[in-house]
Image (cartoon, rainbow, N blue to C red; front, side, top):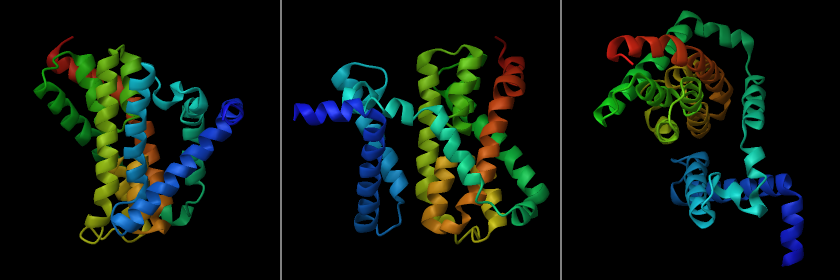
Length: 254
């Protein structure tokens, strides 16, 4: 047993890939057998990941979830920004440019609405829970855009760790909600072609939520929804710590 543990720890990144692969296999099996495909395996995997992160934090009193376990220390690298951004870029390469151009002005409008409306909702929720300063309101509002925009904005504005954590939690909740809800509303909103997928991705914004939801609806639509969702994340990282922050500051003061 000690020999196996040493081998897994010495090859931590490979161990991380194997562990994530095992969780995805288990999640997809649960999706197929327990929900008959209505809840995508990615949504179940995110929930399992959050549970494991919670258990890892409790057992080690650390700050990095399961990455604080020596055997799974490779999760810290695998789950970092480098591989995340690589996966997003790789997804975008599957897009048919001719079809993508058909989104046109509607896609641009979807990006604008998908950035501002969740931000306003997030700011309202933050204010309802007692936050009054511009930095906290902006950071939590940015988290409602995506769980990537939240911490990026918080770090840029100097927000406290609890506020950044709340912004991440807000974004994760949104991602899971989008992932679970997409198959149920797809028929109603006619989410059945690349153009509608791009508009949907722009409005929802969360790359993981849109990708998982579209995968459960029609796998062919995933690259199109992920493309505009990726732009949405980039747009949020640009405007949240700048334009939106100054707008909130003008309304509430420092």
